[in-house]
Length: 223
Image 1: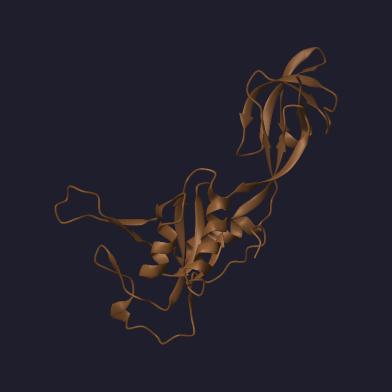
Image 2: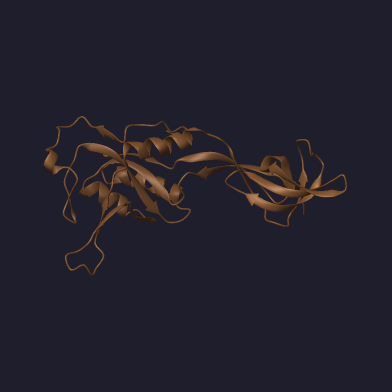
């Protein structure tokens, strides 16, 4: 499955193994994980910009450690993006939906949890801290499986494939309008709205400085 062709799935999938006793599922105590037959999605925090490296390394380690039948999928949800560079050129790229995290669909047990945690550049699972009895030292993190709603929302967002336009712009930058009704007008940026992929610029229209809202895709930055 490619990163840009993610399909919403059930957050848990029962493998073809004997059903577990309900009392045995989940996490027992601070360090013991009871063996379960249920594969669910977990969020794993990783070092900045190391998402792809962690994905590739964990896929290899899962095979080497003999847990590839329980670490089933490793995904980095992404959406397509276009970056407008300083020279005005456009570069196709991908924008991570949740930078600093990878999603792993796995059967949680001692072996799979250790395989993930010991992978270089992995910080920890997302979950709840199980504090030690003294209350002074930090305890273990109990991995928390993502809910059905969380999984659906994440994969739906990645599957939308709406191109995000990113631009290296700031207030005071000079721009040239390349398309739309104000094509060939020059102006100065007065506001940048990255979330909306829009900006406001002062354009000289009929001899007057007029604020105009423009799409990132409609402009190029002037040197």
